[in-house]
Amino acid sequence: MRKHNMILLFVLSVFLMPSMLMAQAIEKNSLSLTLKYFNDNNKTQHLLVQAKSKIDGKFQQIAAIPVQFYIGSEALSENLLGKGITNDKGEALLEIPSQAKAEWLKSPNQNFVVVSEANIKFDEARGDLAITKAKLKIDTLDGRNIIASIVASVDTVWMPVAHVDFVVGVKRFGGLLNVNETQTYTSDSTGMITALFKRDSLPGDQKGNLILVTSVIDNDTYGNLSSEIEVPWGTKLVYTNNFDHRSLFARRGYSPIWLETLAYTIVVAVWAVIIFLVVQIKKIKNLGIE
Image 1 (spheres, rainbow, N blue to C red):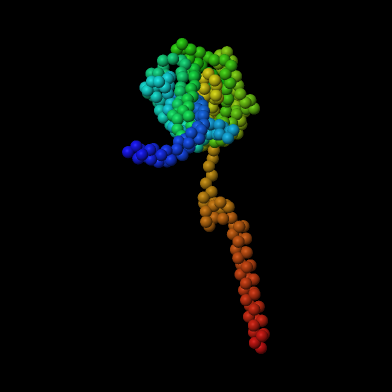
Image 2: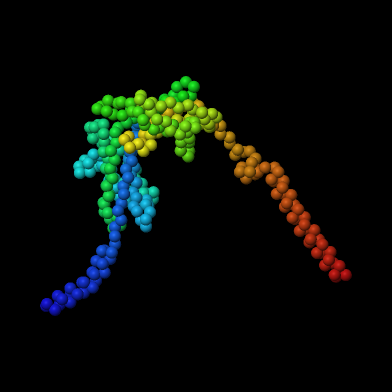
């Protein structure tokens, strides 16, 4: 019996030893979670986490990492805001739900936490972000002047904030176009900045409206804030339908006259040459018979 037990232990060690050695050989990489806060036009708020890891001496975005978002402390299950999985860019986005309102109103300062559990490749990771609640506003004055202001919550009172950098631009498909040659503005003691709109003849929508946007980007205290307003300062977008007009990109039968003439001329010329050659071949053949 004892001999059988020793044989069994030997067999198990032979099969399990490679797996144990392989497990010891695999070294996990450390994972970095960077958390960002966004306040969109004072209406919605969302969190964005970026997962990165240093692999082969370079930081790379890590996809397919399950993460959990918390407000306050992750120690309390009721503080869970939601869950997500990072995409191909190593990012996961979560809109802050209305259920967090009670915790949000407790203090002018808030702390957000994101955590990920350990897996085969990476150790568990944690990222946090402390922000002060703030609001950004934008308005216009006569002469195409734009004013923007920032206020922060201080003991339940909204107070203007100085020395905060703003970006003021026009919303376009590729992002924001600055309203003039100035790249950034800094708020004064009243929390305000003024910018002059110099983008004349900029195409707008069908009514000539443009969307002005002011933003605070990656501020250490307030996060990312944005506010927008619609103004009739653009040129009207007039859509021309060329579906029933002759053009290079029109439907079949509506190509330009010069292009059709050229094409038909080439066809006629080619067939004329072919017919001429056939006639000449017949004449040569007849001469040979005679």
